[in-house]
Amino acid sequence: MWTTLVRERAVSSLPPEKLLPDRQPSYVSSWIYVFGVATIAALIVVVISGMILGLGGPTWWHTTSLGRFFNGIHLWGVEIFFFAMVVHLWGKFFMGAWRGGRGRTWVTGATTFLIAIGAAFTGYLSQQNFDSQWIASEGKDGLNSVGIGAFFNVANFGQMYTFHVILLPVAVMALVVWHVLLVRRHGVVPPYPAKSSLGPGPASPPGEGSAP
Amino acid sequence: MSTAPPPAAPDPAAPWPGPFIRYDLVKELVIALGVVTLLTLVLTILFTSPDDPPVTIQSWSRAAPRDFVTTSLSELAGTSEIAEYGPPYNHTPEATQKIGPLDLQSAAGVRIPIDTARDFVLEPLRSVPGQPHLQLAIRAYETAPPKLREAWIAAYEAALERARFPGATIALPTGRYGPVAPMMTALLGLAQSGGLDGDLLANEHTFYQTNYTKPLLFLSGGEYFEERAEGQHLLGTQWGMMNETGSYPGQVWLWLYTVWYQIEPFLESPNADALIFVLMGVLSLAFVCIPFIPGLRDLPRHLRLYRAVWRDHYREVEGDPG
Image (cartoon, rainbow over all chains, first blue to last red; front, top):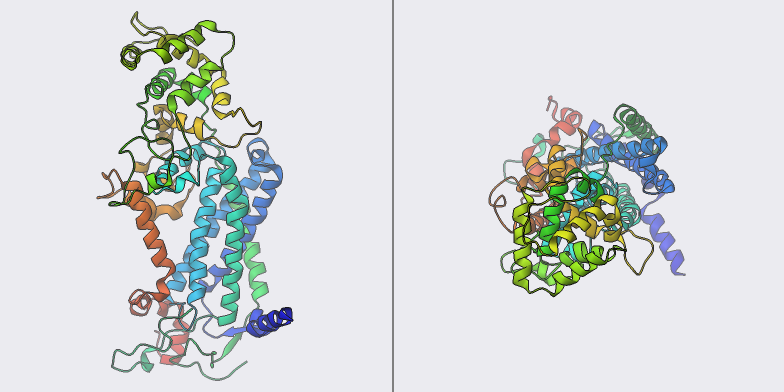
């Protein structure tokens, strides 16, 4: 059965000791590692607060103090999400985290960042206040100038709201799951070679560069 | 736990042969979730979130009737920014932005057709009931020769500087405005009553509405809208793309996108939007593809900032502070 093959492949790629290990290499001992999980934590806060806002509908937060409270949670969750994600990305860049066959891990993470920008942009357009109006009136010019605005109309609240509450969050969450599974499968990238291990020549350290 | 010493040159593609430390990923996530939740709660309680009310056609026409009528006149004359925008709203020649010879704006076509005179002025006025004189004025305007229409509009535009706006009417010096005068007065009355907001949103074929393209494009033609944005430091020249109303942080992550709008050659380029969009597209693609770009992927090794991240590891294998 093909389902058996799928199950066996999944278990062999990500056995429990890789998926949820109880140990990490000794070099995983820096505060920079906190920002990856902080990004996921902020994403959880953003998704849950967004779902609560969705229960009341797009105008709820303008008319009730409870709605305004959850909109605040949503907004600050987004700010923390991007802050943590940017620090995480810079950290991974300076660590050359794509080495040793971890190219796809970087690609999924970087793509998540770009899709998340779109999710936030459509969120700002869905606020139904002056900020939304202004962002739509300015944003249309950039999108129209390359033909995208003809299909992705920032003044169409229904279209932007759908992108914000369903399409883009699903894409972000799917990419985050993929990214985390890749991290668990390949492990955390080890340090670059120490000074003492490098010879006098222009040798490239093992595993430099990457293949997906 | 392994007692093997950490290797000085670990192979990133091979399993780690050195020592391990205890690590509970679930515990880490739970703690992070708790901290982030607490932080968002504190920030929400301290600062809440901004919610500057939207501008409506009604609030605009009441607060700035002269600006509203001036804008409406340009929509009727077909000289407004939207009237001359080009795709996706209309077919204005030579209005599009280009990337060299590439005209993607035209290639996408006119998919959201807007005729500002018809959609923003004439059709809403036609919907006003119980005013036969207004309907006669509209017919007179539509059947008049183009040159005569232009003359009426030019005369009206010139007189607007001396206009007064008592109540929902427009007091103008005597002049040859033709049907334009009663049309503009009726449009101002319709706008101030709130009727124009509904007319621009309504579609005769549907009951539910979610598309605000027409009222938003109309609003964006007025100075009132821009002045309010300027007051909230949202203009492009104020780095507005990454700002929020009030003193709140906005889309700060768009800092690089807005940087290009502040510098040459984009600052004065008529194709700035298209050029910056493509530039950011190329930069974004490069960002995603860093692991596969020779030189760029080697940059971290040369920058050596990784030594700060792994300082404990290097201290152990090199025997110095790193």
